[in-house]
Image (tube, rainbow, N blue to C red; front, side):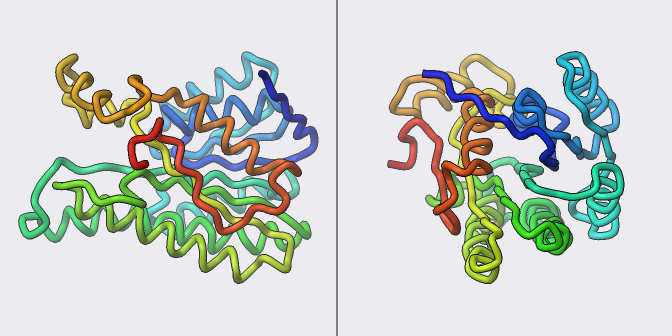
Length: 254
């Protein structure tokens, strides 16, 4: 069954929109006729996403920004509101991973690098998205966690810490603004066919098969499957949903 959304006149912001889940979600918002702010660190990648959106007849802007730097993401959010007049939806998807390493062996600088993007980046983004949405009277924010945000994985201490923290922060913030018509939820993907998965598996077929073997459904997920969850969470169909974590992982953490 196919479900379509109509977000005509709505404004959606997507971080980490240069590749993978972020790009696919930006395209999905554009297909639903929303205005889209495509945000990412790589100018080449976000311009390619912009090209794809424009090619399909969508309206968007591409803004280079680093979510780990508050001034950078603040400026990107301000540019979005300045361009489109408001902000209705935000998908805070930007995130990075690290190589598997035992907890006590994680270099301090590597810990800081992961936390700065995966956790601080969500805090900085929401800090400036929320006031913009409150001015409009409502909004929906979805943050990207991971299966590693609901279950521990060996060698992934910093990554797990960032994603568990993201979930806790999202739940608390959802309660802060529940009565102000601002909904905040989390999507936690499993193993998805993205550039991050390629890095995680070492780019080898053997590594890919080992990763997919963790999935009870016997395959990796597709970025479109996460994008559809995000669009549903922005819709009126999810009007009674806030402070929730949607694990979309083929049963990996069941």
